[in-house]
Every structure is written in structure tokens, then in C-alpha cells.
Image 1 (cartoon, helix red, strand yellow):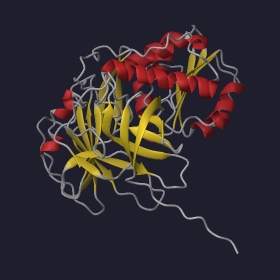
Image 2 (cartoon, one colour):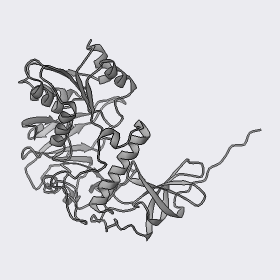
Image 3 (cartoon, helix red, strand yellow):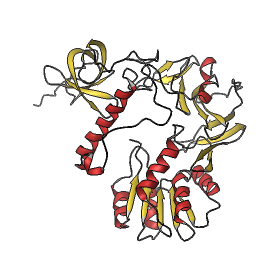
Image 4 (cartoon, helix red, strand yellow):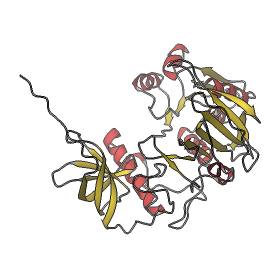
Length: 402
């Protein structure tokens, strides 16, 4: 005879807790009187709060929770400027209840902890002073939010209202304005109109030009509405894929199938909803940081892995001179086309299409002087890291989004 252990859902259970340190992922760590670990959103270190469980049961290693009542507030707490922020509401922002300076300190704490836990390094070991700086123009008084997000992905509810997803949920929080959306996105007026038969809307407002674009994803079998927004805009449509492994294809409805951005003194074409840094100054700041870290030298060979539309490949080619060479690898066919277009004036830049872990070993390259990689959230993976290490590069720059 064997008895099966049963677990009891703890969702909705409330605990009075003292909030501990910040953790990666937009929450802080706390423990109940019984020793249960809680990952608490909408709290700040040092606060005493009532935390309501949102995920987990009696058998879970940890529970997720929202701070629904603040009993003892941190001096860094402010009223969230956005009316859609808070427990159970929009999941787009993690720290609207914290002063801007406190948000940067929380980020610094997360980075310090990750360096220590994953790499066994201190800030001093990596010549970092332990601070996180605001991007130029983003330093605002408490209670104000920088409108920086040049690409916003809206979800649409069953009633055709545009909104954003709630935290760790498919449910839609309808909104009438997103405070962090860049002006070029907000002035399209997407939240003001109905979107029948549409499942999702991606809005793009390029900062390197006046280009604006919306990419519409219809519901299965849904028809595309006539799109009339408050500003001129290109419209693209995501086609329904066939089968489980169907690739996402995007078709132009009207207007340009791409937007133009500016960075590192060049214009970059990004086609059909392709990837570009969301913050208007991120591309320039990242190029500057990566180039300062790599210190490219004339005549060197370089790899740009997960190269997208060629931002780092172009910056490297510009600095390596006529005898230098750059190989870029990218899995998106559209991005490869854009990269080849963007870098057509560099004779010694080659862009290969395919997955990095498959293409890089097939290139026959046995060494490289410098490597930059900017992989998706899942990371580069052990095999790719081993391959890079086998090339014995002088320096590697890893741009991590998570």
C-alpha cells in the first residue's frame, strides 16, 4: 500500500511578513513565521506588509504573493503614478511604487547578487563602483515616469479593448494610456478605439526617423479592421500559421514594411516588426559600452553572434578598418536581409543565416580576436559558450537582456 501526498492550494492566503532583500524578477524575498519563502511583488526591502498568495500550494518550494497592505512603509515608497499599477493589475512595470533613485539601487543590488552567486565576483573584481546610472534624459523627480518605451505590445480582450497583460497571466488589463510608452506610440491613439477580431497589436515609433508602424495579429479566422489612427502609420499583419511548427510570417497591408533607426552615426533598417532596442538611447549606449569593453584594433577578426540587423557588426567593421573582418550570425531571415542591406558598404562583413549553435561550428573558424554576443532571454547555452572559448578570443562582450 502506498499513500499519495495531497497538497492544498494556498492562493488567497494572507501572511504578515517583514520584507527582505530584492531578488531578480521584480520582487523581494520574505519568510512567513513558519519559514515559507515568499516572492513578494509591490513591496520594498525593510517594509512590513500583508502579503496575499497568488501562486503556490502547501507542497511548493516557494510561494508568489502581492503586498496588498503596507503596515510599515519604506522611505523609498511613493504612490504609483500609473492608475493601472498594483496588485492584480497590469504586469508591465515592477517598481512604480519606488522612487527612481531607489529603483536604480534595487537594480544594483540584483546585479551585485547575480555576480556573486553566478560568478563568485564582487563589484571590485570587475571594476564596477556598484551604482546604476539613469540613461540621459531619464532622471526625473519622484512621481514622474520617463516615457521611453518605443515598442509596446498590446493585448486585446474579448470586447476589443486594448490593454496589457496582468503579471504572469493571459488576462488583459484594459488601459487608456501607458505612462512609459514613448510619445510616438501614445499619439497613435491605440487605446482609444475598438479592435474587434484582433488578438494583439505591436506599436513601434522609431526614434531615428518619423517612422511609425503597427503590427496586427488577428484572432483565428478574424478579419483585419480598417485601421484609422491619430497619426500616419504603416500597417502590417501577422499571418495565421499552419501546423504546430509554423513560423510567424508578417505581411504588409500598407506603408513601409520597415522602420528606420539611427545609432553609431548610421541609419538602420528594421523590417516587419524585427528586433531593435526598446529604449531610445539603448542602442547608442550599448554600442559605446561594448566598443569600450572590446577595444577593437585595426586588422582584427570579430564575431557578432545573434547579430540582428547588424548593429554591433557595423560598429566593429567601422573600427577594425579595411584589413579587419566581421562575421555575423542570425537566425531571423528578415533580420539577415536587413543586416546585409545595412552593412552593404563593408566589403569584409559577412552575415550568415541560421542558429548560432549550428552555424558557428560549421564556419570552420578556429580563432577570433573579439566576440560580441547578444542572445535572447534563454541565453547562449553551454555548447555555444564552449565553442566561443575554443576560439581563444582576446575579449568577449556578452550583452544580456536577462
